[in-house]
Image 1 (cartoon, rainbow, N blue to C red):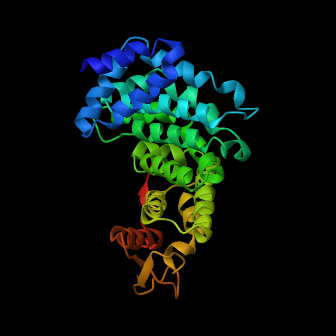
Image 2 (image 1 turned 30 degrees about the horizontal axis):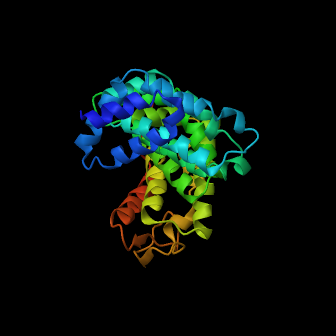
Length: 306
């Protein structure tokens, strides 16, 4: 790795210039134009002595201001820069596992538990933390299932629920993305369905999310995340009533003409009489997903998760 990076890492140890160093380090990260370059940079940052400790000091230093929100924009920016460096570390698979084994999300959880009033001025910090968690949530690689279980242990699901309920549109989008990634994994789906109260919370929060879409028309990506969450849940049946709960709480807004991105409709389904399945103008996958979702909710056979 280049000497400029080595010098920046060394300069992080100087508290008097750390704010400027974090800015320079973020600019250096932005300059890494390919995934391979970012992964290489993440590897060097992860293996550099005391770098993570210094970055966590930046996080912990903000704790006293969470209950009495007096953070300035400058302080928020400095914290976000530190979080972005940790996110760059998470570009490397070994670092992702290492960050989770080091319980790094636990240092970030206090920012995700804050009230709606406090979350508003800290929304950029909250968004940076959720982006970091999303970067950690890579389950389609050799370490993927280990990462999933480590992440579930950090209470990521209820924290995402809180952010979906109380965050702004961007916060809700990333929190829903994380939830979607978890629900698409069999072990993640088992976790969300393991307890009736936990499952009911997921269903209720998703329903409220779609209700919010009615007043804040979502982009197709946001809508897709929500549909995929329902699609994953619709594949489950168990004696506790998951299937009936999903079916009963399914928001009809998803299959009528509520959203602005919907421009055409297909023939109605017998599951929802006289309601049509929408075809999305800018994402052809969404109508296919919705058709499959309705089929799952009308089928007498679904996947049983033991």
